[in-house]
Image (cartoon, rainbow, N blue to C red; front, side, top):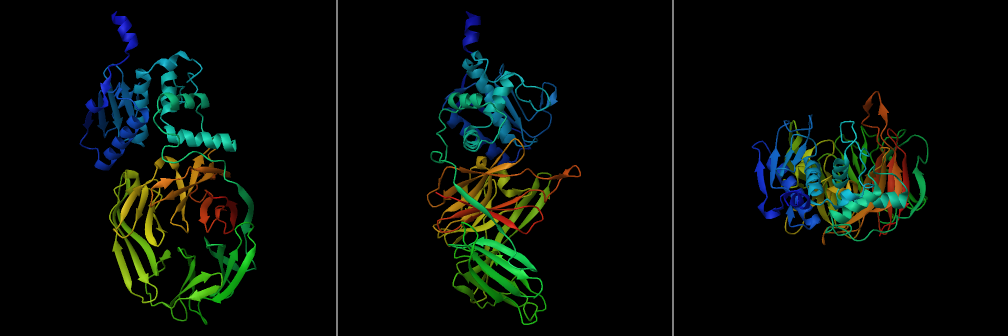
Length: 500
């Protein structure tokens, strides 16, 4: 009888409410918040009231050893103890992985199907083939949202993006994540976004340097600066569909006989602006709104340096302080400096520090981006969230980390378009589109475009920082476009993609 009970109950089931959580003193609060968020999400996805986990220990050291090698987590079915170490990279995935091991012990029905989770089909991380339970955990740790997006890309674009077995992934979604609604935080998947022909932003005449490319309401706006004649600027309004020059203007941004002329293109909700620093006098600054009817100069008394965006009549620039430690660069202060275009009055807004998970405010190689929603400033923190200004002050909105957002483009109706990238087995990325409506907090399903960025270039046994193809999303009134530029090149290749 005892053996029969053991077979039916492979572990001691514990209510999630009775789970004991132990935390090392060295675990910082933000990392812990991220782990507990993963735990709550897993509980919601599984829909189970009990599990084979009795205690969760969150450690901060490297001393956790499993099967003779260092590991970021471990689970012991005999005691129900799950441990995860924050000293290793990506402890959140480590926690999800160990929860999957516990689920394997709790529900043994899939063990009868030997075609699922075949032994040795995945590497366990040390060059050795994984056993069936480890293959299951490696498949399960992908999570329902990432697995769904990968399935869409593979099915709709024919691109291999995961080495996990499709049948095994599907089985995990059904058996482990049964309560995760299809798409989780978006609606049903759509067909691949139709894309048009690709056209190239190339010099319309010799001796021109690309100043910038941005989206107007109805055109892709391209600005060129002359190398031969200091201060001469050519502005093109190109049709998004084929790149044909619909409107062309020329202006003298600095002069006459400027000492030095630095020209840049600034984005804004009413279309791009051209900013020139250094006219006849060294500190002279000029500003034009680049309308299809012609550049409109806004005389300005601004004395600050180059801005990033022009929103609601003010030129803004994002700035921050940080301190460095072993975990990266931690932001310690965040603000925006502004200059009201017409009056020249300087404005500074101190922004609240975001309370996103650790990845949001610890900078590695990716810095926050200043953007806007409607006529309000916003700050996009890659892989984390969105901070936005409004009538009630600054508010935060966490963005789904599983989407792997690669770029943001504000739309004309208060929406934010995002580039979504899905890594393939060759190291490249298939691009997709998704739209967030911040006011409602709703997402549209990420739609693959089936446009692929190649893998980074490897040189001299190190990854070259300039080896990745730069990609941007441009968004206008009823149109969107993907702009790509090869490393070290000034020419952009633009492909129009249909937006929903």
